[in-house]
Structure formats: C-alpha cells, structure tokens
Picture 1: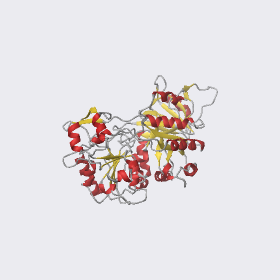
Picture 2: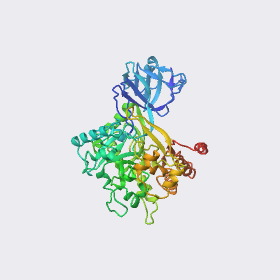
Picture 3: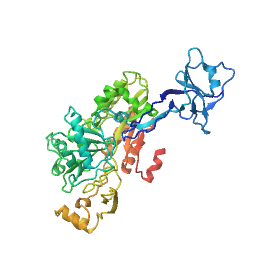
Picture 4: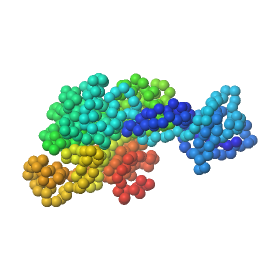
Amino acid sequence: MRELAARRVDLVDADTLTSRRTTSLGHGMRDRFKTVIVTTAVIGLMACGVDQDQPPRVADRVFLNGVVYIADEAQSMAEAVAVLDDQIIFVGTNANAADLIGEKTETHDLKGRFVLPGLHDTHMHPVMAITVEECDLAGEAKSLEGLHQFVSDCLLRYPVSSNGWFAVQLWNFAEANQPSERFQNIRQALDAVSLEVPILLIGNDGHHFAVNSAALAKASNAEGLEVGLSAETMTTDFPHLSVYVGVDAQGEPNGRVAEVYALEAMGINNIFAFGLDLKMADPAKFYEVTLQHGITTALDAAVDLDTLEFYRTLAADEVKTRITLATFLEPGHYLDAAGDVDYASMLRVAQEVQASFEETPNVKADFLKLFVDGVLEGDPLANPPSLPNAAMSRDYLQPIFSFDEESLDIAVSGYVDVDGAVCREQSGGTSVDPDVFQSAHGFHPRQCETNAGTLQYDRDVIIGFVRAGDAAGFTVMMHAIGDKAVSTALDAIEGTTGDRNHIVTHIQVVKPADQGRFAT
C-alpha cells in the first residue's frame, strides 16, 4: 500500500467544464474534459510508507477507478484517492483503497476520469470575469466602424445604468480599432452612437478606457465646476491628467483614457461597480470562473469596497473556493486637513474589512493592493501617437509608426530626433500648423515632447503606504511595471519588518541593479 502525507483537499467534479473567461483579459478554456480536480495545499504529492502496525483508518470518501496524477518526479499515476477530515490520506490502487472503506464511507466511481491537483491562482480578478447579461465585447477586436455598430446595438438592447452612464465591458484596446473615413478616432465613433448618454468602454486589462463627448463634458475641476476635458482645460484645470488622456492632432481629447484618474474627474469613482448588481443576484456564477476551470484557491488582486459586498453575498452560503482578498483603498481618499495621507484612518477601514471575514470559512482579507504606476501600452493609431504611462527611469522614445490598411499591420518606421534641429526649433514656442509640420517632417509636432511616465502617487506616499500596511499586519501587493516603479516598490519593502513576503507584480522592466534585491 502507498500512502500520502496528509494534505488539505477539495474534490471538484469537473465533468461539465465549459468555455468561460478565467481572467479579466477574457481568456477561457475551449475544450470539455472529463476531469476531477483535487486541491492540495502542496501541489506535489509525496508518497511515504504505511506503518503496518497501525490499524487501517476508515476514510470519509474514497474515489476509485480513476487516472490519478501524483505529481512526483516520475509523474506516476494511480487508481484511487482516499480522504479523511478534509485531508488526502491515501493515493494508490483500488485494491489497497478497499481497506479504507467502512460502513459510512462515501465511494465514488471515477469511471476512468483524470484526477489532478487543483490550481492556485495567485493573481486574478474573478468577479470582473463573471459573465452576466450586459453589453460585453468579450475582447473581440473590432475596427472603429465595428465598435460603433456594436455599441449602437447594445444601447438599444440594454438599459443605461442608474448613474446615467452606459458601460461596455472588455473592450480590446490593443488590437484593431483602426480608423475609417467616417471615424478618425474612437471619440467620433462613440459620438455617433450618442451625444447625450455618456458612454464608457472598459478595456480588457482594466487600465484602458474610451469615452464619448458626453462623458468628457462631465469632467469637474478642483473647485467642483463642470468644465469638461478639452485642449484648453487640459492646460488650465487638468494638466496632471495629460499623461493619461489621448489627444488628436489639434490637442483635443480623442476619447482614449488610460488609468482611472481622468474617469474620476468625470465622476466615475469605481469601474468595478458596473454590472455588479447583476453578479450579486447570482453569486454562484463565481464558481464558473474558478471551480469549473480547476481553480480552487484564488487571490483576488484588487477588491474595492463595492466588490467586497459581492463576497459578503457569496459568503451567505458555504464558500467553495479558498479566497484571499487584496483590499484596494485609494490613498487619495484618506487625506487629513493638511492634505497628507491619513494612514491610520485608511488602515482602520482595512482592519474592519479583515475582521468582517474572520468568521467566514475559506475567505480572508489580509492583503492590500497598491498601484505604483500604470502600463506600457500606448496608442500607435492616434495622431500624435500616445506614449505609455508606466514609470520609467528615462524618457520613452517617440516612435514614428506606419500602418498598412490592407494587412492592418503596424510597424515602427523610425524615431523622432527630439534633440535635433527640427524639434529644437519647435520647442522655441513658435505656433505651427500640425498638418503642415507633419507633411514636412513626417511626424506630429507634439512628438517633440517626451515623458518618462509617472508614479501614480508621490514616492513618499508609496513608501508610507507599504510600511504602514506592513506594521498593521497586512501583506501588500504592488502593481509595478516600469523600472522606476519597481525600484520604488523595492525601496518601500526594504523598510518593512520582514515578517511578511510583500509582492511586486508584473515587473515588466527591471534595472539590472534591482534584480538581486528581490532575494533579500
């Protein structure tokens, strides 16, 4: 007989796996499998010998006639699994498993189905991935003409939300979106849908958005006056948003927005709230995202206060997936009279959230989420092309793109010499006609400007957030993509107690000097 060291286990009958999105990017599993998922706290199942002097234990459940993947070095297979008190106590043959079957043991005939360890997803957004009846592009790449038609049809079929906005989920910001003779940018395409209803396309990465003129007009400045986002107010009222808002050749917003800060100016404080009421009406759909894909342990990597209500609704019944919540609290929403972040006030909210799940089996809220910077994707089809906003240690290059209208291929044909004579003359302040300039030089005059992206908060705020969260007993998960953001995140971690393994996630660009700091 072969027996396993005891491990916690959930057994999931996944005989009816269906094609569902498993992340906010819309990726799903296409095939149907006859599979049983076994969740173990440790994926590798290490076999050990049985003490023959000990009487055989009686299992609560025994699974027979399966193809059981043991995940040892030899990638061995077995036939049977036995479970006692939520732990695997045996993996081996059908004959030996019979010794563990008593009068009250549940036996399950797997009929040749495959058994494998459950998946532990340490960064996902499962509530965002739940499918409900709403306007949803499902990540499908469309031209601006195609987007116009799709959103127009949606506006006829679905109601406008209670806050007056019309939201479209899972817009593929990175593919297609090519202009046409009628629509030179996405703002024009959405304006042709409606000039009265503010429209919001929510990108399938949660960092890119698109809006129409009715939405841009709702932007309020620091004094609370609704002045709208325009070329003029981007200079006078919203200069801090320039890195996040795409513009056309005349400097007017072209409808593309990166990150949530420009949306907050328009009155949208939580993109996750759109469609949340439909998801809360049937919280069991959560398991279509997790269990049906073999995900039995999940870390929800950014949970705002509204989405926490979904988890409280889910917890009204037994929670069947082990879930860790990374509570997302915006530091700018917790300022004291001097305008500094009141970490004590913010952490009291986090601790209240943590305490609210302490008696909920399989759910804990002992992580915090912080966005240190943005993302590396710009918009090559805009004129001028928009640059990324992830925080880098040096300026981005200004690429000159070529676009093949037949193949729809985009290529970099060169880079602007921002230090050359043409740009030096342009920086002298002389007003030029963008069309004349572009015709003469092959790039838009605003491409003489550069930036290195931006941290989403002051460096001191990032460091203060991480160290305050650590001192309060929370693990902090930091989104950091550019090398400056990664360095800042590591600086913040270096000043913590060392009692917790804080997380820097994505880390797409890292300075060589920072690589070794991850191990210390």
